[in-house]
Length: 205
Image 1 (cartoon, one colour):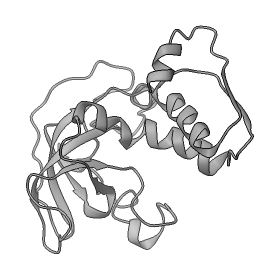
Image 2 (cartoon, rainbow, N blue to C red; image 1 turned 90 degrees about the vertical axis):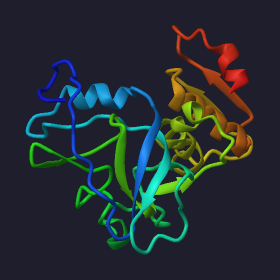
Image 3 (tube, rainbow, N blue to C red; image 1 turned 180 degrees about the horizontal axis):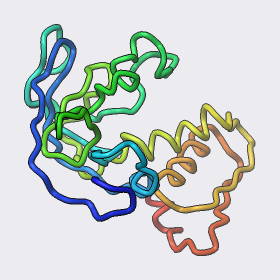
């Protein structure tokens, strides 16, 4: 992305080699998420920028100190790291967001990040290993929308046994809200989206 609200373009970039506690990964699947649309509309002062909030990848190489990943592993990167507090300002997460090392490349002498590229580099605490038999085109949804929706029901709304819940827009994140409500023991879950035609999708999900 070069300008707010303008069409995206395909460019050749240089991807850095993984440093200490970083892994280089090859993007196998990604999606255009609604967050990409909102980001593209308000890019003032942030360009150039590589978009992409959700992805599933294969580890290509690992930097010094990496013990939990090896070449060939399937992984999903997450916006927040594995710190129990999921706090982007916590010291152990400083490499993820504050220092802009989460998905970083060199493009026009500027560090830019996210998943719309063939290769990228991620800090090891921001990646989770996945089942090697999982379909990456589906697993990539776990990186943002699914985990956000599930967490909204279980951790934020604190749905409990007997709760009555409603959702209003049927997208991947909201399907995950329904999943979270069900797991938490909700008594009734209703869909208030009058445009929704996804009842069967909800049941399948």
